[in-house]
Length: 329
Image 1: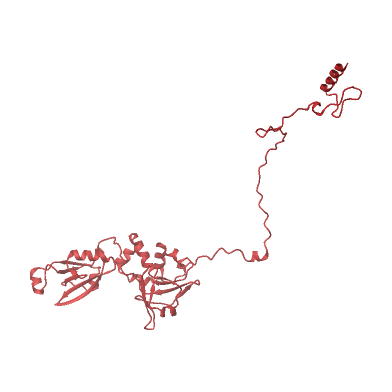
Image 2: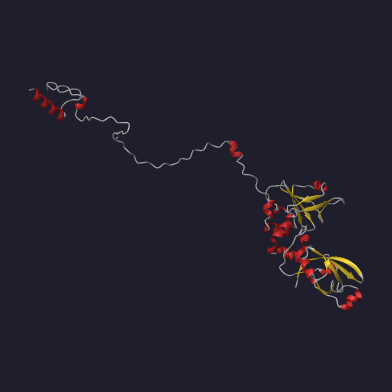
């Protein structure tokens, strides 16, 4: 009987007819242990070396794209509207404020990019040659300055007219020399009532903005040693040859160390500098006269710079300075 009861109770348990708390009343079956309930499974305790995790039923939602929402700006106060944030002072258009008659300087300052230097909101004093001053240069020099081969030399020449600092006439009276942006120096002289800078007379200043003073001057200030490359042949403007034996004996000169001026070139520099046909050239820049010495002197000095000639004329010695030019023919 006991065996039958046990089999009947097992069948009831297997069929799931028993509650979790106890067996049905009157079934004659003893209460079930928890591990004997339907669906109960014995789980092994995880060891340190191996753990078995039960699967978890997780519902995964499709990710939504994130959208950055800009923060809502706070309303501007009345002070923010009245005084916007400063973006820095605009550069002063210096070349546009030059006095009338400065077309040449303004144009060439743009071509050589000097304008960019002058617009850095720094104090400058600019001595601007007038257009009339530029026309006083020799034709050879003006031609050479227009050449693209001499852009760097032109930039140096223009920078020789600019000094750092805003200098009034009183400031200039109190100094003897100034250092230019080109790195050279120019003399200042106020001993005769007016003011001269280099070899130029100073005009009345014009203020451009708060930091720049511009003075017109009547002469271009050419830096010492400035060399210009020619587009044509360099020349002094005279034809020469060795004097013949009779002329050398008559003048008591060494025909192997002197030159005779036989003709002058129209439009060149030798004639206006004082050289005459019939002159005997004794030395060229301190060297004994020769065609080779003349060519070397022209090359070393460059356009617009002077070659010194020692001449013999009517038994007297004299010196002339001839600027190097370009063949006008």
